[in-house]
Amino acid sequence: MKRRRVVATVVAVVVLLAGVATLLLWPEPEPKKAAAPPPSPSASPSPSPSPTPTRDRPPYPYFWPGECFDHPQLSKVITVPELRPCEAPHDGEGVAVIKLPEGLADDADIAQALRELCKPAAAEWQAKQPAGGRYFGYPIGPSMKYYGQGHRDASCTLSASNRQDGPKLTGHLAGATAAP
Image 1 (cartoon, rainbow, N blue to C red):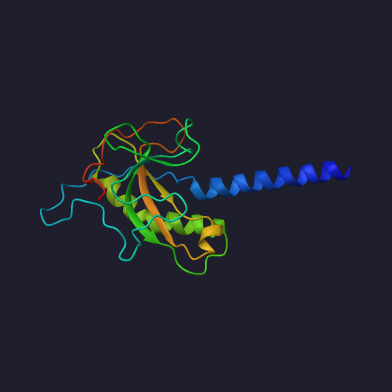
Image 2 (image 1 turned 30 degrees about the vertical axis):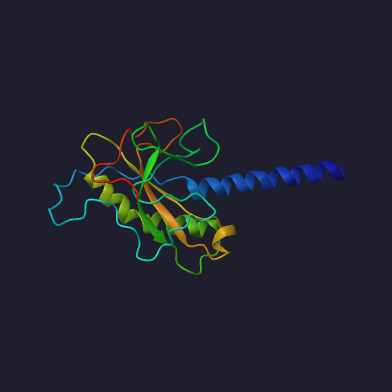
C-alpha cells in the first residue's frame, strides 16, 4: 500500500511539473495586426535588445534578436530548444530581450510577466511582417529555479505557429538582421 502511495505521489509531481512547464513556455495566441507602412529611413531595421542584458547565455533557453531556433513545443523531432540557421526552416526568431522584474513569486507569475513584457516587441515585429501570414509572440525565459538564482534575462521571439509541427519560418523575419 505504501508503494502505491509513493508511485501516485511521484506521478502527481511529474504531472504538476509538466503543467507548470507548459504554462511557462506556451505562447499566448495574438491576433495578426495589419501591416504597418515601411519604416522611415531613420528607423533601426534590426531588433533592439534591452539596455543591460549580459552577452553570456544564461543556463536556460535564450535567443538573442536575429537568432533562429526550433523549440520542442513547436517541433516534435527535438527535445530541447536548439539554435538553427535562419536560412533553413525553423520555429522562431528572437526579436528582443527583456529583464524580468524583481519580486515574482512562482512560475505562473514569471509566465504572466513574460507575456506582458514581450507584447510590445511582438506587436512591433508582427506589424513588420508581410500581410497574409500569421505570427505569434513566443516569450522564453527562466523557470522559478533560475529566477530564484537571480537570472532575469528573457527572450521575446516571434513564430509562425503556436502548435507542434505547424508552419515554419524559412528566413529572417522582415526587417530583421542576422545576430552578431
